[in-house]
Length: 134
Image (tube, rainbow, N blue to C red; front, side, top):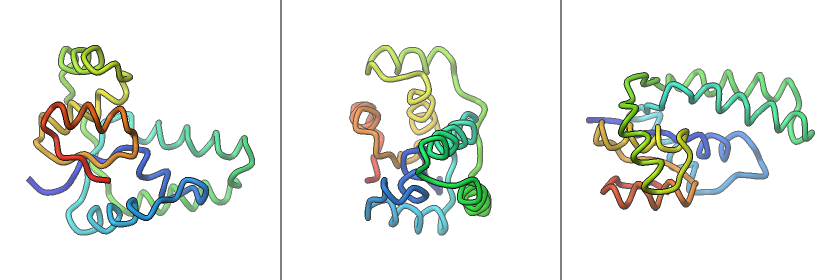
């Protein structure tokens, strides 16, 4: 199966200069070449990060609009088929949020690598035999 599961932390590294890390740029290339999928909450999570960055005066409204347009152009697919019991099991087992468990459940179910900068999520993914990118 092509593509990867894209955690919001990677996108934030692309969009917010003060969160930029070189490793995230290689993920952008992979998304462009093979595509990516994310849980259905992904757009809400991304918009929340951007609005919080606006409120903290890290970015402007026009930068938010430009960022959203750039990400929209990537064509990230959204998945709404999460298995609720599995999400809860993962959240409990690894003491991660349900939101993070949605990414992990998707990576496990679809047998895709997970791109994340979140250390706890990455550790949980490795414990579930999911390849972690970054």
